[in-house]
Image 1: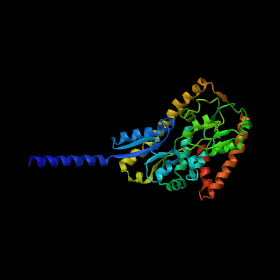
Image 2 (image 1 turned 180 degrees about the horizontal axis):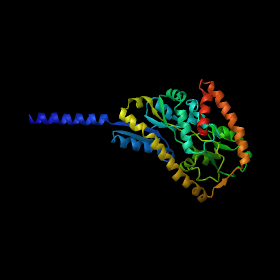
Image 3 (image 1 turned 120 degrees about the horizontal axis):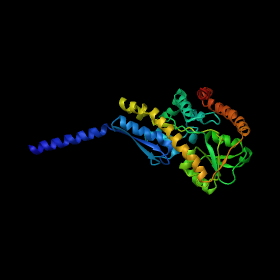
Length: 335
């Protein structure tokens, strides 16, 4: 009788253990590279969600172990993982609505303004429907400052000297580079250092954190301080089915943590990444090239209007409200 009672108790405890374990929710998150300024909001989000749920909802962050960065949206679409980060310019045809945020010379002058413009687009029904084709819900942006260029060899002192220069540049930045005669090449961030070392490209367009994280400053000889042709838009998305399957408490823990995660990101980028950038350039003896106001004005005039017009025409043909999306971005930036 005693043995029967012990067996029953053991089975009950085991069952309770399985039930408790089953109640916990774990999401896999696909990032790439390594932990850096670009991923700090995701790291903070994971910390906050775990805290708010007492560890019952956790985000397991993987840096490259789940998917290639250029395939993260595909992974989200089939539920291979529940959350991911990607950049719109990796596959503009898959997410045309949010590529409006990658147009050159939009006039964004802070990370806070980049967040505002991104969220305005992310909350637009056309963008939600666009990403919905991939079973993806837009959660938050990864706000980046204006890109500038690191290169090897003699640096282009005038915009005319970009003629024939091979530059890693995606999206609208690539179009801006082509407008001054450069040869833009698109590749993932993890491929850039090897391409630079082998001579496939002579220059790379990145935000400062990426130049540091992916090693382009290691053999660079020059850096543009004020070209500022634009930036890339890299959202964090979640699998819509997984989001809908959360309990109300889990969903609240996730969604209520977004603003704090973004605030942490901005603070980290401004107060750690940018403070380290200038001294690093000095330490490595990298020449800093600054262009005149006249040259930059001519560059913007030659690129901004035509790029916007082409984007509106192309995406109106996709049955997107392209003019409306563009106007929304411009109005948000101007507020």
